[in-house]
Image (tube, rainbow, N blue to C red; front, top):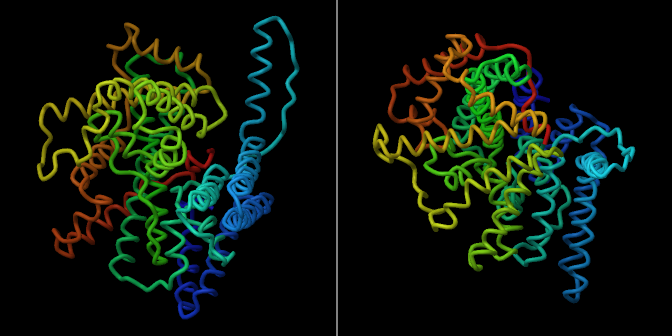
Length: 477
């Protein structure tokens, strides 16, 4: 069920009404929320519902067994069993064919022909996300950060809560489970802000991302026919598309959760206004970045180790992040490029230079800040070319043609309506960068008439830009 579909427009208010109608009974409320989440997932493909339930049950039991273990060896054994089974499912469904085909290609380079054995499997939607939910739970119990919960329904809601189920954010038990286990109350301000955030998420998805997608698909799908300037424009449009698509999903997810009295982890914080790559990665897909930091980077020694270990850990994190996104060398290469971008900041000990919001309290950035933002965006955009391309060879061809003498030719024409929409979108994002989402800036600063006029204009924009329902990019991961 797509967030930008008519089905979700019907599903959400029905669930909301029934949910708050049974607010006097927390267990019944959580049970209904679980049922609604299973229905939401089964709407995609009911055949993989069993895998979701099994994964949930596995980690629920594993958490109890780890906590009850009498010694460290037994404790570690139960953890390893849970991790191996979880990653085993993820490996079979997502990476098995990639590894067999890669080994076949490797041997073919030495003149040895191998017919790879592949599996005809459909990737279960959301498997990368709910697997990481469960892993964080059992690892936190193993590390004595959290005690196992006895209520299977509450734990299942933590894993399966429908706003975050298929594309995150990747939650932590320490953050979400206490909210699920505690009686929720209706907060009018949170409820209204949730609706605003949903609206802004739909604007990002339908008006920005989906409109850019038609040009991106056309340019990347036929890159050999376009000049360098058009290819560069296509890369910029993809950078805008993937941000609008994924952060739009996250806004709808966070806004939907607020309607049920639940606050999810923030996933984006205006990453394209970052002044270097380190700041970008602190603001892009924040729940995944922090997951790898806490469960991989720090256990490997983190930033407290000697320089060579820090460099090794940095490359491991970025390569894992790339591999997490998909079974293709393009994603791994994308991770490698970002690690290389990050390396100079690490060597100069400047990877934490910017922890504040750019141009706080000012309308415009300084020239230096503007140049930093622009250069960081350009670097990120070139890395996205590998992310979007079908294979590494195509990515290098795409980039080489950008830097050809056709770069100075006139690019293809972009629809004026889309150009204006992107400009207004970027302006609103800039002025809203000190808030969770830009529509919050109108809450206190604008009269009611102005606020509602803006809402109606945005809704009208959704109608004018509507088209075929397009799935979210990160549903493939």
